[in-house]
Length: 71
Image 1 (tube, rainbow, N blue to C red):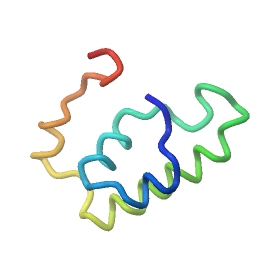
Image 2: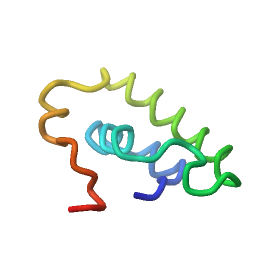
Image 3: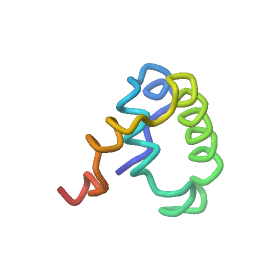
Image 4: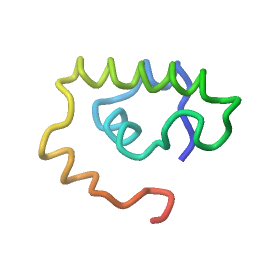
């Protein structure tokens, strides 16, 4: 799963934010040169997710734990 752009995060739904938060690799895991930008994006995801009230049990169950790239 690739990191979204800042613009995509700003327009994202609660469910999209939860999906990214759960399944994106930690910043810099794929390429160290991307870690600064990915860190900024993950912080924005986290901030927006908190604004929506975070994870709910319903969303967590809906997303499951299977990485979407393996589905």
